Image (cartoon, rainbow, N blue to C red; front, side, top):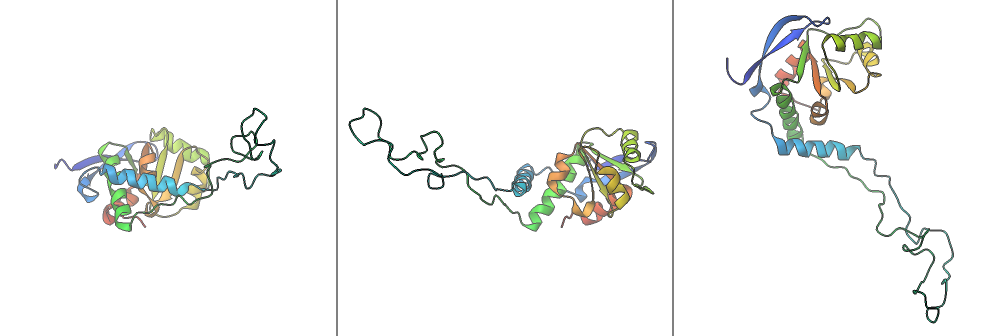
Length: 214
């Protein structure tokens, strides 16, 4: 078997191994692209910032414009206004104001970053595969028991082939667990999760698309 091909156990909902699947890492990438991954993570984090922070300048502070005391002869430092930044209650000099932190990467870079992130997770053995995921009704306890059966602890990104309301409602209240279709995967979510859980079908989708994200 090639060094680029790894075997991953496919488990059922009870945690028992049902088969092994061979995954060719070259379908995703040839190596970890550290700089590209950093650029992608910085972009996704920056785009989450609201940028509504604001401080008042001396022009926006309410108060008198009157000079506190005369310029000379008092023995005190010269002062022109009680709204000066060096006075308590005065304006803020060079403080933050609303701004847009948004950054961007082109589509090709985003796709390559996702491929590299998946390559990294597969290489490090942080990807688990379950034969199928389905629930007849939304129950958090059932989904939580599934994670325990698969011995998944900590943060987990669950990738499914398509949106399933029962699975989504069952997983949304579990801390640090995010369930999304693999078509919505991005490099940041993949890297941020301790474990990536995929169904057999969703793995095949990623392999066929080469980690393509929209």
